[in-house]
Image 1 (cartoon, rainbow, N blue to C red):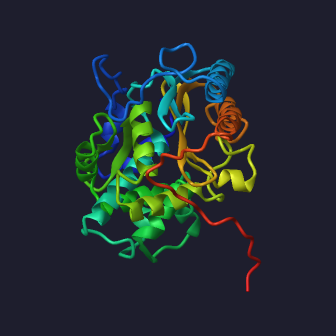
Image 2 (image 1 turned 60 degrees about the horizontal axis):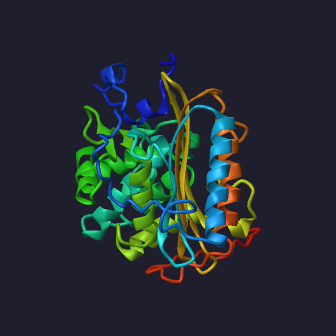
Image 3 (image 1 turned 180 degrees about the vertical axis):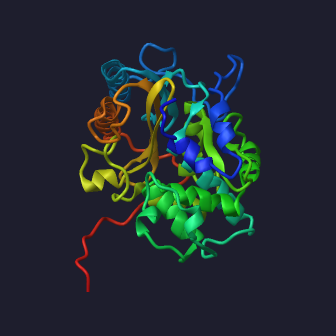
Length: 354
């Protein structure tokens, strides 16, 4: 491990948690016999039952771009990409070591947010409920709260969920732990059928490492979120509205898109490092022009170089940008007419005050 403490460690650090950092163990691969939730059938050109025509060509272009960009960026990739075909059926386009259990880093904030919204759906918490933001809970890295330099605000659950998903605020993770402790988060995730997606508890029950997931389970979470089945429709709309807003992350998948195109992509980025090297992850959902979910991507890459480059020039992030444009172009002619749920956001309009 590098001498400085990673964000994964810092988020979970409590009074007695430092010892756990030194003894943390690498995630193990999922057993070959594991059946992951939400598995889409593998089909496509060259596979029996696969689609033909425009959709098949689009899927082939995604696979080719993925292979090219993966080789160019280097590292070890674990990915799942699925796309709705012309008949409205969700099909796996890329399944590259998709059941690998891996540290999700900030992509895991999606699972944390789902757990918080589940508790809200059950009437045990409210979006407008306020908590005090005190100096002792502030954590640096990504986000906005540590930039305040003075603290003492009372902020709503909606406030810190927005900060966690839009700008990946690390302090917001700790705020989530105050309302849904680590063990409860894991119980909620297990109740929703996830086998591997878990946060990692530490000595302080209200703090945790962001933990592990698999590309396939991340796909499942995203697809169920987009179809508004993993939480209530109202809660799903709240989370999707944040993830799709254009002020969020756009160094990767959304880089080479117009503002209108970016608003059709809900995305979450995660980056950190371990003893193997840098990790750069991105996962999200693309919607058609009518608001129907049409494509999911969950791309996890580790063992990368350029350890301290968290910007747009990192090779894996550049790969995400190319793949983002390729995937978006692939769904340009696809309309998910069979969608059971839709989600739209208002077009961006600049405001100059007043």
